[in-house]
Length: 188
Image 1 (cartoon, one colour):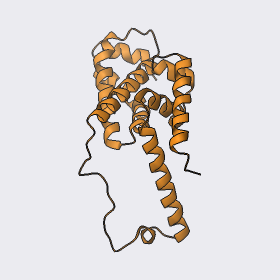
Image 2: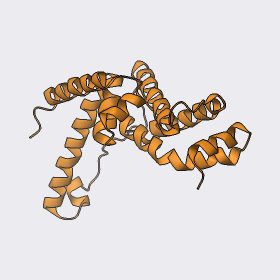
Image 3: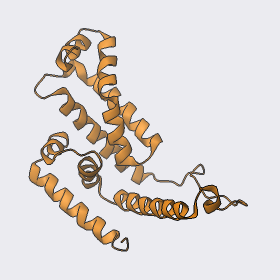
Image 4: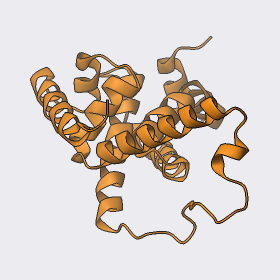
């Protein structure tokens, strides 16, 4: 199997199949980060496309000063943060947003087992409250929180991806955690 650097050199020489191999190698990682950050499949796909478009355009200037994965994840975090800022600026309620509809069947009737129904409803409400609270965080705090707690990256890795110091990432996480704790204090 070829290394990332070997593939990049091939891309720089005009081999588009080498770029496809790089995309296949990292596409799940990028999509997972985007999905965790935006909590929207459509937004995650938009971010994914933007990330790999920027990677494609930037590979000719890649100078091998860092690992490809670090460079890719830095682009991913930047695109997520930029996307989040744009989204908040132009946020409009969509008519396609999922809504509960009037129906003769209750939610409890649609899920087998009464106890299971109650549990699923509680889990759904809890997830919604957490997702809503995370959405209120400033973009850089939200990205650090997402990378740490949803994606499992270490602080040092997050710092590299976000082009920040370890201390800055720790501060983002501390502030985000305290804000979320305040917003979610009614959850048990």
